Image 1 (cartoon, rainbow, N blue to C red):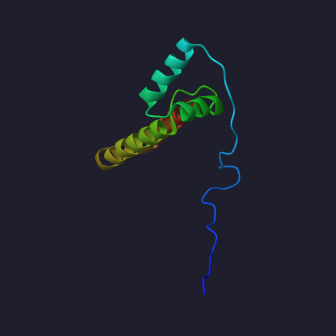
Image 2 (tube, rainbow, N blue to C red):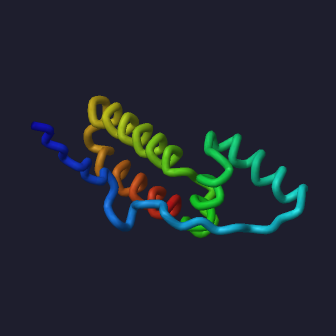
Amino acid sequence: MYNYQPKKPTKTENERKDKVKSVRMSKDEEKKINDNANKAGMSFGSYMVNVAANGGNKFTPADLVEFQNTVNDICNIVKENAPDKVQNMQEGAFKLWRKLI
């Protein structure tokens, strides 16, 4: 007997991308957006959504992860070599992080 189990959605209701919008733009605007998307390593549509949803933040989520990983590595080096400086380093990193997001 065949026992079919429907696949559960991997994304929550809020994460699903089920809306489609049409946007008019000039050829120059399209080229500029496309160039920026390519620089960010994103598709045209993903870049448009990311920029619009993040209030013009020029950093992609991948950029923010890279920044955080670098700061974590730096904090670990400081912890090994100058443990008394770790608290100041973490506070400075937190202030920087707040400016990025």
